[in-house]
Image (cartoon, rainbow, N blue to C red; front, top):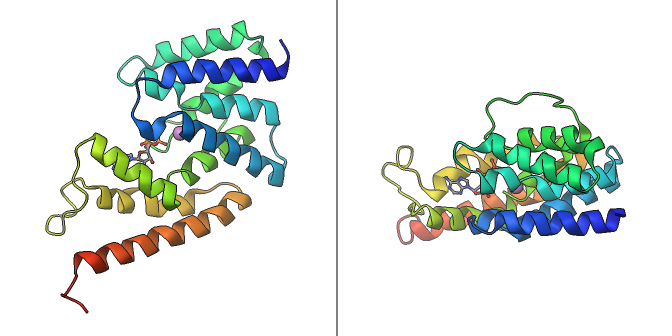
Length: 208
Ligand code: ADP
Ligand code: NI
């Protein structure tokens, strides 16, 4: 199998795994992360582009299909897939990246300075901010049946606006590469513009 065929097979594997998941983690999220990751690497030239593309495609496969207790089984299946497609050589690296990529991972382990990991983390975080990030947040909030905003008990009730403060507004400071920091600046500004307008409309007639 040549590299093009391996990429196509990986795309199919990923699409199959993502089917049952919420649309914030859908195929288009994977596609955007792949594009962002490859772009960042074009600027930075720190990772092997092929390994990066495979890892970007697979980065949410375990999370989405095996959400629950069965994460380890998810890694086994990805390992088998990589063996079958002749990618045994990069198997450990790719699985290591998938394990560590998530913002919510409280127990990172292994090679935390792998450039493939650093770039995919950046790409994944960039897709959580800016206009797309806002769309994904409200989509997720709807999926969980969360309210959009609660002005009275904002800090205690999970709302999508409170998620901005818990996660989205800090992501700009968590970027690894200079290219991602540059891209994050514009997206972060857009979050702030959005919030300003949101409160302005919410307070309509009260402040001005
Ligand atoms: P990761 O796996 O990268 O840590 P998540 O799976 O937690 O990310 O989040 C996926 C998407 O859903 C992101 O765009 C994130 O901002 C959004 N999201 C996660 N939790 C919430 C929440 N409580 N309210 C609104 N959006 C959320
Ligand atoms: Ni992701």
